Image 1 (cartoon, rainbow, N blue to C red):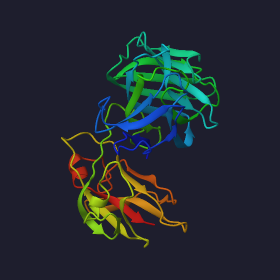
Image 2 (image 1 turned 90 degrees about the vertical axis):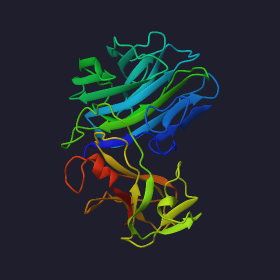
Image 3 (image 1 turned 180 degrees about the vertical axis):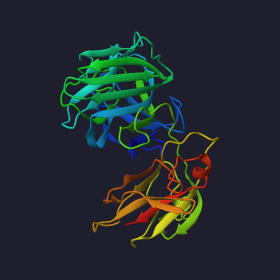
Length: 353
């Protein structure tokens, strides 16, 4: 397994993934308009309620540091009244953590730059001659490889075209990366300015699939739309009349829920169909879950594909609600790539462990 993170904020919840840092009067939100999401129903919007305030960002912390990492995301820049012409839009950090590198965008020239460190004063690694225009979605892909503290590769693709290709010393500090930070980290700008992000994916180079450049793609949410083959959990909170309707509201909440105290009990649900027949790189189960008391508890995100029922790694729960994720890069029923037909027939849910 080599996909490390997939997020499009399709739950409508800004807490779906990553750690929020909200500066004074900063605003982080999952929005369905202004701008219109690149795909699906929501995207992440970073804005400010007044001008000249401190940074607001979203940080994705990987389970371990990496010497090579591939990141893909959609970005939308709305620079109305922006007080700084060049601004950081994404930063990488080491395991320390310390700023390793960043990509910046210039609101005057629309030029993209790759820099060492985490600011517009860092040494330039490359400059794109292709502009990243405002008021429209663009796809950025960023590869960072650290062979040593003096040898590495930095590559950037803009809308599928490689626009930066640097080989040499791309290390600002320790030769690894473990954090990706989306959003401006320092510059002040007007309240009318905002940046939006969508369709975020991160790969490393291990394994046999998703082990390199991510490529263009969308992150879509398929909500539960019917009962699955196992209905062993009990409804709690507001009773909607069926287990699957307890867990398909957006944004997710614990006003209505299902649960069980019995290890091995499983709830599965049919999910909505895909539109068309897209190429599918990964399937993930996302659950908002918490333990009902301080006695300890866990669950395993679960899928059933054909005759195969597969549990992902067990996730320990706390008494505070948090998202638990399970990931399948191939179909457990065939051990091959997912097909649209298999996803449309999929059952998804969780098992008490």
